[in-house]
Amino acid sequence: MANPKLTQHIRANVLAALIEDRHGIDLTAQLIPEQAQAGASVISREAAVLCGTPWFEECFRNLDPNCKINWMVQEGETVSAGQTLCEIRGNARAMLTAERPALNFLQTLSATATQTRRYVDAVAGTEAKIMDTRKTLPGLRMAQKYAVTVGGGHNQRIGLFDGVLIKENHIAAAGSISAVLGHAFQITPAGVPIQIEVETLEQLEEALNAGAKLILLDNFSVSDMRRAVIQTNGRAELEASGGITLENVRSFAGTGVHRISIGALTKDVKAIDLSMRFETAT
Image (tube, rainbow, N blue to C red):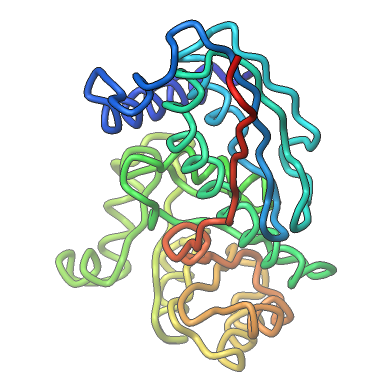
């Protein structure tokens, strides 16, 4: 892939998955002759946005560098139930060993991309961007954030090291919104975003007066969100978060808020139903 850092994560994800599954050996695959070749195809059992093909391919090529994979669908495209996604040919043992980890990555990342696309479609025509959060599956942070972008969403900070998010506990420990923001402005490196979470319109005004330029409105109602947008009047970028679903996301987007963060994109995923069918080994 073009992104070297993402490529490193893909290889690390796949290596960890294969180690977890094999511990050095696939006992059942030993039933197949060592040099036997096989073909297989992957079929989607439901409509989805395809995502995770680099992880899928790495699973097979880690075990069989000469494996051939022919995709009928490209990353980010919508697939339908019963559609063939790809055909694979290679060493039969390697393919059987790679099957489950490869499908695990493909069905999980496709689920995140599919859910993201639903939210993006729901707010189409508004100014609101759909954003992810740090509520990701352990070990798959970069993979799921990649899947969000495939679905048309946008990434926020990757972790605790590349952005500041001041939440209610930080405010309580520091004493006030103005105090914690003042300290953040002093110690945060240039170019690193500083965001503060507020829970009321009064806190919003305090944050604005203290110089906040990126403010998260936590669990605001649609009516209060609209008031917040009017009150802010362009002084800061606003993000809606908390209690937002596919059913109400467009109402929040219609308030004029700039960003909407959805934890469910990455933490509440239901894997896409995929299957792999093998031909007789030769």
